[in-house]
Image 1 (cartoon, rainbow, N blue to C red):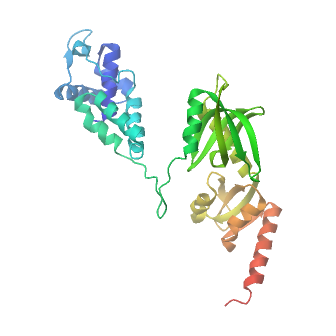
Image 2: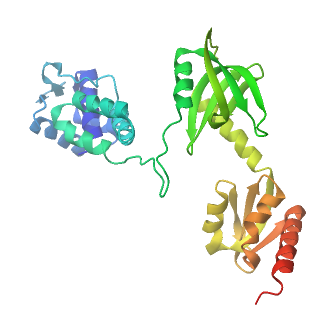
Image 3: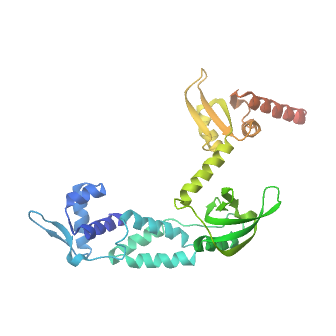
Length: 317
């Protein structure tokens, strides 16, 4: 019996007062027999759950027994343990929050909750590298986001030229160990790499933020725009079907497998990258295992790379 389903049964009984096994089964998408076993197991575990036979009967909690997690759904409760558990390995605050969450559960559920919390962890140190801690700049910017105060940034762009900007900080995102600040500017929403922010001085001026802004939705728009830029050029190639997973691993989401195959059993695949040269560089190592059908610029870049390699290593045995 899963801990999250136990919590779901309790929360449903708290909110409805009385439930039948059939109602629980429909709500939790399990069989009636499974729902009945869950109710009986709760009672056997010492939770004051009692059946009331007869017309209009069902199962109810004696005295409306409650838990401090009554404001959460079962899925939300377990998600908290799964989310906070990994973070507790690197954050004292998360560790404290986890202890409070576990104490809020009925005693009979705590072991399962602690198991869910310890199911995964985060090790911030890569093999052979120093411990990577969250940059101090992130904490400073996060405080400005929470307090909703404008920040004066000194920012070094790609050319390393420094500029000063007054921005409305909206949120921070950690993408593959690189932090980004999403902020409002005179030119609309902009995304700044935190490692390029030289200085960040919070002001006392209130920051503005659109009423309909959500960080998750805004970040998805940023990711979509980046992905569009990263796949401006597409090439159609032929490759043996057994190598398609490897090609997909190289190009990720910019790899589309077509239907059918040619007379030699090769699959038709479309791959994308910012430029023809980027695609050619990825495919050059495949040699004759890959045949590029189009576009011509990619074929030309491959021919150029091949000629350079042949000239460089023509005398090698």
